[in-house]
View (spheres, rainbow, N blue to C red):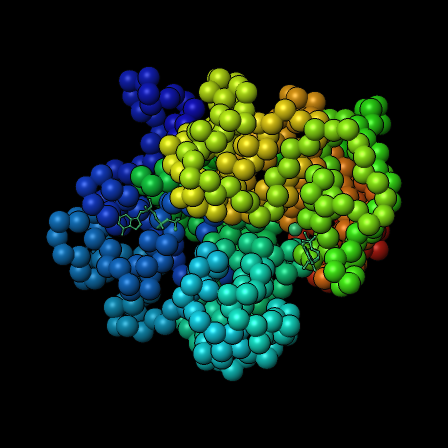
Length: 542
Ligand code: ADP
Ligand code: ADP
Ligand code: MG
C-alpha cells in the first residue's frame, strides 16, 4: 500500500476510501496548476513550544513563510492576486485569527533557524564572534556561548568550524534575537544527546518568558517529545500535497504517528505501526562469535586525541549499537574496524568482508544513482532488492539523478543502500539517521533490521537517535571519556547495562508511555527520575 488509503488501494479501487477529507476543501496555498498544495496551518502560541512532526517536502517551510508574512496565502486560487483580507476572512473565528491580524499589522517579528546549517558559511563571511554579535538583540550572548560550549570556536572563521559547532552557533544566533515568533527547522542534526538536551532546554526557557511563540520541526522523537507542548502532525505526499493537522497533545501526536494512524482525522499514514519493548532484549548467547578483537589504542598527531578500545567479541547475526558523545572516537573506531586506519597498539587481523558507510559520505562521481547502485548490488533491479532496499529507502524517485546533485538526505539513503547491497560479513553504519526526516528514519530502521534478520548479517550502528538505537540494537558498545581528548570504548554489553552506563553518564532517565510502552525522557528531579536513578534503572522498566 502507499499508506494513503485504509482499506483499499486507489490504483485498483473503484472507490477511493479515506482520502483526507481536507482535500475536498481549498488549500491554504497552492503554488500553481497541479503544483504543491498545503492544507491547514500550524498555530503559533505565545508562551508555548509548538512541534511539527512529519516528512520533509510536505509544506513546513511554506507554512512558515505565510506565518511570517513573507508569502500571502492564495487560498488555492493562484490566478488571482492573493490578499490578506481574504485570508483573514477564511480564518475568522479560528485560533489563527489574532495571529494573522498581527501579521497584517506588521507586528510579528520572526527569528528563523534554517534547516541546512551547512549553507551558513556560504552566506556569511567572518568569524563566530562577528556573526553572533550581530544577532544579539537580547544581550544574552555570553550565557548562550557558555551553555552551548561555543567558546572554543568564537574566533574561528565560520567556514572552518564543524557541523556540530555550526548547529550550535546557528541556535545561539536565532535564540539571541528579540522576536515574537521563533521558527527552528530541526535542532538536533550533528548534535549528541547531551547537546540536544541543552538546545531543548534553551528553547523551553525562551518560551517560558510567556510572550514568545516557539515552533520546532524535529525528527528525533525523544527530543520532540521532551520539548513540545502541542504538536501538529503533517502528512500527505511530499512534493504533491501536505496536510497540517489541528494541534494534538505531544504525547498523542507522537503515539498516533508511530501507530501510523491519526485518530481525530481518521487517517492511516503508514501501513505498519512501530512498537517498543519495555524490556531489554535477551542477550544472544547461543549465536557464534563472528570475530574477536584485542585491546586497541589509537591516537592522532602528537596524542592530542587518544582512543582506547576494550577488547571483546562480536557475534554472528547481531546488531550492535554504538553510542557516546561527539568527539569521543566512535568514527575513529569504525575506521579502524573498516581497515581505513591502523591501530597504534593491538592487531585487527580478522579475515572478514566489511561493508562500511562512513559518517561523512563522499559519493561525488558524476554518475546516476541507478548506475552506481547496480555496480554494487548483484541483485539490483530484482523484486527482492526493490522490496528490501529501494522502497523502504525511497530510492525509486531518485534513480535517474546524478550522485552529485543529491541532497543530504538523498545521499544518506543511497549510501545506506550501497552498504547493505554489498555481500559482506559485517555491515558498519556510522550515523545513518543523519539528514533523514522522521519517516525516512522509521523506514531505514525497518530496512536495516529486516536486512540483518533475513541475511543473518552482523551489523554495527553508530547513532545519536535513541529510538533508532532501541529499535535496532541487540547489544551496546558505550563510549565515554573527555571529548576531543580521550575516548574509552566498553566491550559490547547487554542493552540494559549498556543503556544504564550511557544514560548514567548523561544523567537522563526514561519512563514508559502508559499506553504504548514508548520511552519518554523524565523531567530531571521528578519523582520517577529520582526513583529510577536510585534503582540504577535508566532506561528499561522491566
Ligand atoms: P518542507 O519545509 O516541509 O520540506 P516546503 O514547504 O519547503 O516543504 O516545500 C513543499 C513543496 O512545495 C515542495 O514540493 C516544494 O518543491 C514546493 N515548493 C516550495 N516553494 C515553491 C515555489 N516557490 N513554487 C513552487 N513550488 C514550491
Ligand atoms: P566521534 O565519531 O565520536 O564524534 P571521532 O572519532 O570523529 O569522534 O573524533 C575523535 C577526536 O579525534 C575528535 O577530537 C576529532 O577532532 C579527532 N580527529 C578525528 N580525526 C582526526 C584526524 N584525522 N587527525 C587528527 N584528529 C582527528
Ligand atoms: Mg563520528
